[in-house]
Image 1: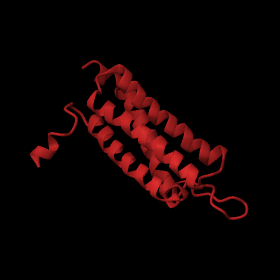
Image 2: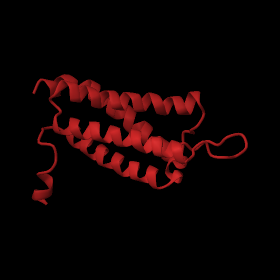
Image 3: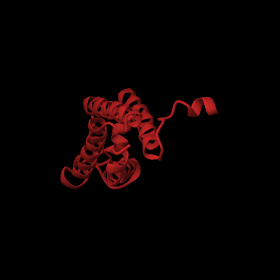
Image 4: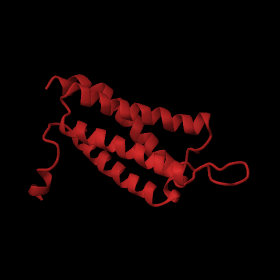
Length: 141
């Protein structure tokens, strides 16, 4: 077990480990989005007026690509949390995700506040707030 723990980011505090975990989960979500349009359809869970889902194979793969890019940024930030540019890129990735999910819910209507949609909204908003409040502490290391 100690051998596995040695792969975690070597910094104090939970934020680097959280970024690592979120990165791994995001990479797995990317695979899900590439394998099946059903993953994106469960996330963007609203339907068009005729009852069809608002997602298609292209939008699912695009979401998978965007999610994987976020995963890479967050993984780099987890291991380089004291580097201002990487910290800020990770912070921006959560900010952009938060704005995206809120817009899909409240502006575009492609998602409803239920089911699988709630998790990324909570992760994006809470991690964004966490990173904003901890920025000076990690960059002062």
